[in-house]
Amino acid sequence: MQSTPTPSGPATGISASTGKLQVRDPATGELLRELEITPIDLLPVMYVRAREAQSHWSRLSLHARARKLLDLRETVLNHADELIDLISRENGKPRMEALSCDISPSLELLTYFARNAPRMLRKKRVNIANPILLLRKSVLEFAPLGVVAVISPWNFPMLLPFGEIAMALVAGNAIIFKPSEYTPLIGLKLQELCEEAGFPPGILQTVVGDGRLGAAMIEQRPNKIFFTGSVPTGKKIMEAASKHLIPVCLELGGKDAMIVLQDADLDYATSAALWGAFVNSGQVCASTERLLLHESIAPAFLEKLTAKLGALRQGPSTGLENDLGPVTMEKQKDVYQRQVDQAKKAGAQFLSGGDFSQDRRYLRPAIVTGKDIEKLEIYREETFGPVVAATTFRTIPEAIAKANDSPYGLLASVITKDLSLGEDIARQLDVGTVTINEAVYTAGIPETPWGGVKESGFGRKHSEMGLMEFVAVKHIHQPRTAGLTFKSLWWFPYTPFQYQTFRLFIDLYRKSWWNKLRALPLFLWNFAQFVKRERRL
Ligand code: NAD
Image 1 (cartoon, rainbow, N blue to C red):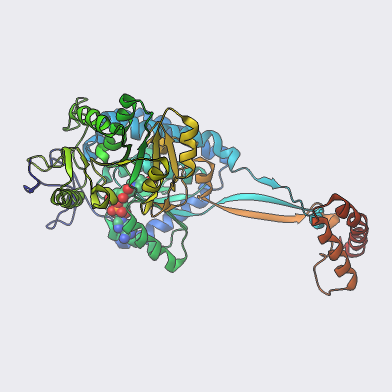
Image 2 (cartoon, rainbow, N blue to C red):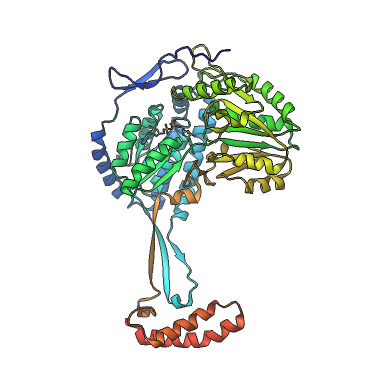
């Protein structure tokens, strides 16, 4: 066990000699494909194509667009084995996770939005309570935005963009999609699947490249940017978008806490923490990176967790035999190295792992603790890898304060037998989602919103709230019938009669029914006179 790096073998990246993107299996370094980078000067043409496709697509009925999502679902199913293979080879995750965490929830997303978007995006009548507006009506319509830029990371290369793709398309938008430069093959595959499913050409176009291309996409002024990735990149995107006032939705990083209460069943709690911290080798925005353990159970909990972690198998994803894959992204290894080195230097206790494999393709999964752990970067900053840092608490307010002591606010979990206490704690945690007796997985539920607070970003994806991120709400306000068109009470020229009618009107807000009722008849009489006098059509 040593933390001195031996050099890694070849990894996914842009070749200095050819300028092409070499996509490699992160477990072996095997070259999977070499791709041309999308030239930046092609972007304007792609946006024009997207706008043309969108203008036809948006004229289809909502039901027709929803039916297309079901065609896409069938196409995904027809290619399921090929997709599992591609995801696990390009990203490195076990085949089981490509199936359970990418493909299966993507199918659920398509099903949910195909079934529910027509109802959610149907025009809606709004009831207006104000008596002055009694003879007016309002309707909300949900128009597509136009062209949406979707910029994604590599950790769930199918699930993450698929949510945006399903929501944007059913709402009538076109998409320019930039997958991570670490997973462009699955990104290109998603465009192929859409084409095979019969979506119009140009409605989803995938570009291949790194952050420079992502930045150039913003300069083409998409109607909205839906970004999932790190906090520093999210800040750059928001800054660039602000120059053109492009709305953004930012799904960013996390340092999620799991609070384990004194009453927790240790076998259950350690299994929840094991999956929460190490699924996808910890390369999950919502993975459990901080364990807050009641001091009475901490030693037994950590002993059990360490034993369970020791039984997991780490290796390439070719078969079904491994639980943990390699590190997907070369750059992230520097973050692990820095955090681990700092923790070791500070005397933190590694109960397991923390060192790289000989070929430096794997970080041995680590549980780290110690009396000063809360001061260390490994506990405070996002690791985005197979590392969990554990500390203890004595009282519930202390646990809540510790969980909230973070710049991030994506997800938190509470493990307890007392569900009402769990809910009470959940209400006090500054995060977008709290799971009780579960961890991580709710980004896979299409019915519920996903997103964070604080530096974990803003905006929501999935659910009706997420769908609303992809439409422009249009309010249409008009007289109830043409025959009831009259000049408004607040229009020029102001008269003593208008003033008196308004004065009577505000008394309708009084608390006491007696006072309200006293004002009502005269107000109605005045208002009726006014309408009669000012009716025009
Ligand atoms: P990243 O920020 O490095 O890159 C994300 C995407 O942004 C990539 O496609 C990249 O090419 C692109 N990009 C980089 N610079 C850009 C720029 N200046 N302009 C436009 N695009 C640019 O993140 P990553 O390493 O790919 O992903 C890991 C991060 O994503 C972690 O912080 C993780 O927590 C976060 N994440 C968040 C969620 C969520 O739902 N909140 C989900 C998954 C991952």
